[in-house]
Length: 321
Image (cartoon, rainbow, N blue to C red; front, side, top):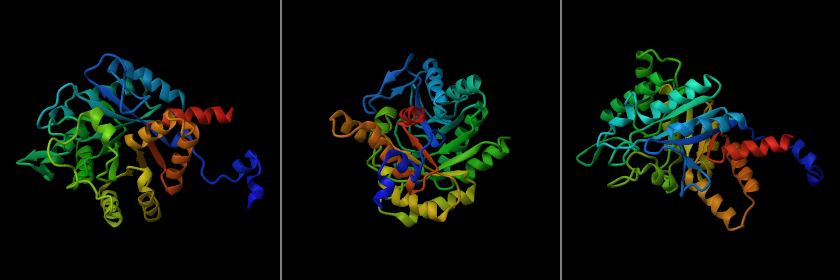
C-alpha cells in the first residue's frame, strides 16, 4: 500500500477527495449599525461588513472564484415580532441589491430566512405566552422570502426549523412571480452547542429557554432523515446539515439516501477551535483546515459553507501555480 504514497505527485494522483473553490460558500454578516468593516472577536480574522464595505468584500470573494455568498443581516434595531426582517429597505434586502447591482449573475447570492436576528426575544419564531407559534411564524417567513426575491436573491435559506417552512415559502415565491428563486433548506439543523460565535455576533441568544423544541436533538439520526425527506417533498432544491464537523455520520447517511445537492455548514465554533489551535501553535492552519474540509467532503457534502472559504480558495490557487 505504501508504494503509492512515496511522493507528493503520486499521492495527488490517487487522491480520492478533491477540494475546489467551486464547492465553497462564504458567509458574510452585514451590520446596519456600522459604516466600515469591523473585526469580530468571536470569529478571529473575520469582519462584519457595512453596506459601504460589502462591495470590497464580495470583490475578494469573486476574485477567488468562489461561486456564492450567504448573507446574514444584522439590524440596527430589534422588535418583538422581528418585523425588520422583511422590510423592503431592510439591511439584508439592501445588501442583496448592492451585490446584484454590482455583480449581476456572476456570483450567486443566498439569503438567510429567519426571525432570530431581528427579534428581541432571540427565538426563530413568533412568540406568544412563552410558546413558539409554528403557523404564525410561517407567515413571517413567507414575507421574508418574498422581500429577498424582490431584491434579487438567487436562493433563500430558511434556517428556523419551522414545520412546513419549505412548502409555505415555495408557494409564496411562486404566487408572487418568483418561481426561479431556489430554496436551500436548513433541513437537518441540530440543537448544538457550537453556535456560540454566531449568537454573539447576531445578539440572538434566546431570552428564555432554548431552541431544543424546534431544532434537532444531537442524538437523532433517523429524525434528521425524516426532516430532510419532508423538505425535499415540499420543494427544497438543496438541503443542509448543520453543524458539519461533529455530524459527519448525518452527512454520510443523507448522501446514501438522497440525490439532492447537500450542503454542510461548518459553523463558528468549528472555525474558532481551529483558530485557537493555530494561535497556540498546536496545528498548521492550512493543513488542519484542508483536513477538516476534506472530511466534510468525504462524508458526502457537495457544498461547504465555511468562514475559511477565502483562505482555502487562495491556498488552492497557490497550489495550482
